[in-house]
Amino acid sequence: MSPRAAKQGSLIPAKAGIGLRFQHHQAVIDTKPRVAWMEVHTENYMGGGTPLRYLEAIRRDVPISLHGVGLSLGSAEGLDQAHLERVRQVAERIEPGLVSEHIAWSVVGGTYLADLLPLPMTEEALAIVCRHVDQMQSCLKRRILVENPSTYLAFRHSTIPEWEFITAVAERTGCGILCDVNNIFVSARNHGWDASAYLAALPPAAIGEIHLAGHAVRPLPDGTILRIDDHGSRVIEEVWTLYRQALARFGPVPTLIEWDNDIPPLGVLLEEAARAGALMTDAKRETTHADAA
Amino acid sequence: MPTLLELQQAMRRSLVLHDNEAASALVADGIPPDRLDIYRNTIVTGLTKALRLSFPVVQRLVGTDFFNGAAERFIAAHPPREAYLDRYGGEFPEFLRDFPPATSLAYLADVARLEWAINGALHAPDAGPLDLAALAAVDSEDQSHISFVAHPAVRLLRADYPVDRMWRAVLAGDDEALTSLDINAGPVHLLVERRATGIEVVPLDAPAWRFLADLCAGRSLQSALDRAVGLDAPAVLAEHLATGRFTAFVLAASEPAPALRAALA
Image (cartoon, rainbow over all chains, first blue to last red; front, side, top):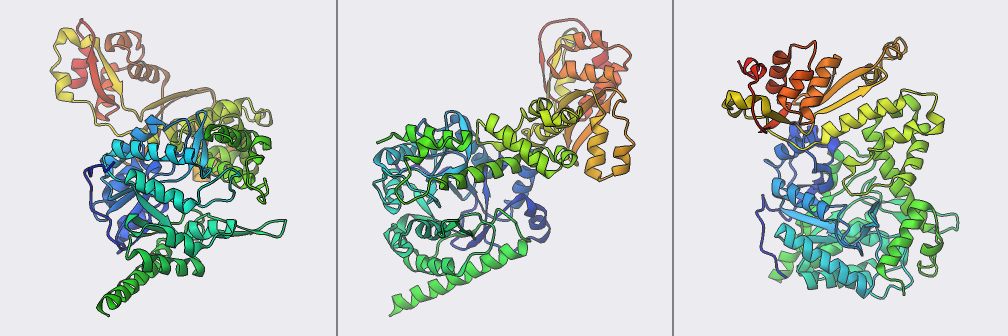
């Protein structure tokens, strides 16, 4: 399926952006920071009133991307049509440059388990996710991006490596991939995968966006260390290194700094975005040199 | 091999009901089943945060530890049914009313009801005001059969305790106002609405509250007027229209309504 483009606002440039949270609404309006684009969680703008007014004001100056966290593309029982309709309405109103969701699930038996839960990597789950990506793309009349999750456990009966699973979703549905470099790092460490090999297995043409964030490192009683994707700190050096590899492979891609816990002043997010932007400029220069040589 | 649905049902039993048995059997070798706790903690922390955002005054009245404990019990008994968390917590006031550790705080559930009304007003969809010119153009014989459609952000609440004053005092951090408050001062009739400047909680007298409640419930203007005793109904109606508390009107059948003409004059 290749959905025709819906009405889009300003396109998201291959530059660095920041995740916009309520705490920074006023600061963004007041200071008009020089940042190429911003991303919000779709679920935070499903009502009317103040949040939507801020977002509508901000989107006049900055391209906006919508990142969903609640549609549960991996639900065995099907998509919540009411939720999909709410997503469609937000998209219609905000005219985002990009729309994304996750390779995860959170709804079963009419209960919303408020987290991005891991899927078994099976043919059955793959078929279900693809069906729901098709539904979402048809409903929104546009291509979406799906994000690789960070996971803390794996299932006994999984048969497909995660990088093959997400690549297959992109191939079968025509959707793009939101490559969360921090999630690759977190999951690779938690499961003993090779993060660079994961990156190398993704199809460059499908990569529509990159996410970067900080994560927590938790020592467990059994002596092992678990990495938890809490978006509560700066991007760590190893993840910046992995990001450089991603840029070398994918070329410049819109890159987002996400921060959701212990949210710092806006300036800290802008510093992180500036660092991502500088790395993108370096990567572009290196690519140009390589082309010239 | 379990189906995806079986796996998701097992995960739900683990994450909501703390029954790890079925889910543990699905986890790959070498991964301790207590990894399920990581997800459960994220869910409870996230939902507790959502409840704290909707019920900040309840939280300040009972303290963080009490609130977190109540939230955890509430989440287990009433997990969200949809991913639209702005609407999560509607059963929390009733839960608090029946929550044994809170029985000494008789007003707590009413404070929670006020906060839930405020939360509803805060997140209600946008809607334009009623078309006053169209309303004025209604034939006089049809006017009594007008009924109004309330703005989605309008909430009406009757409470046994002066929860509006408690709410204001707690938000302002005004301990003196809070301690000097007579909680047995009698019931309050409140209008909660969203204005350009933010949420307003307006105490009304009982007849004005009932008149507005009748109109918001879709009762015909004539019928609401018949019940409105001790009230300058035209003036009150004019204010409701001017402040955009109604977004539309519908006509049912006939009889003149002098009050509407007076309100529009």
